[in-house]
Length: 240
Ligand SMILES: [Zn+2]
Image 1 (cartoon, rainbow, N blue to C red):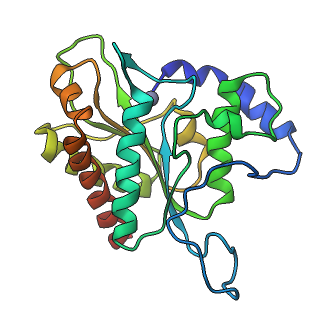
Image 2 (image 1 turned 30 degrees about the vertical axis):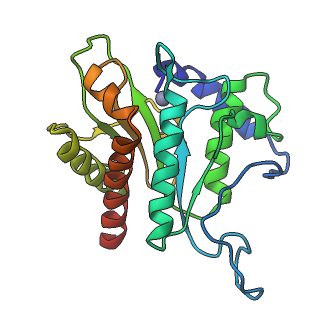
Image 3 (image 1 turned 180 degrees about the horizontal axis):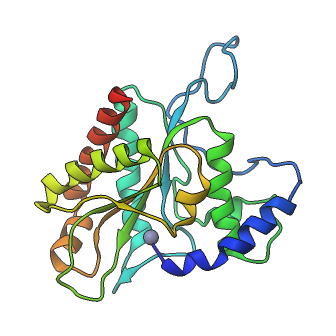
């Protein structure tokens, strides 16, 4: 997660207030867990129930953090796909906001801003508004100046349910990483400020740390990370 992103906050707000164009999701690749087969299903034909929205951090030309040829966007996608499959296999409705390597800003046909970054962020927010979401889990990988800094970190909104969700995910990941980190208030992050549903950012580990890097790039460990996140999401959903 790049802290510089907060730079655009004020501009983003202004643009969104001024943008009254009708909003649509024409080309967005929604990867729906389950579509309704009942033609009389009420409310929304594609999303009959509230879903878990998995926000796959970065994509396309926005790679996120990197180490040599390892790029954050690819790790986020691999873990996200596993979380998606696990939730689906347990009967939960889930969607990914990208199921391949592209920037969300390429899907944004309604916000005519020259800033790709702004369109990207606005698309994430708009998707959570259009799709009936139970909660939003945004997946990222961390980077620290010191290579010894390691472990998962979950960021939450200034809101009770978001904290509960963050805490559930943090505790599960702590068990896996053998860390003792507490979730933190993710104050400057756009997605936490502008999404209404309980939303959290999961920094699954530090790409700058050799131990974390080995985990984050190992498909079997990615599955275990995804299992931990999924278990925490389900635990949270059963409690609220
Ligand atoms: Zn990131």
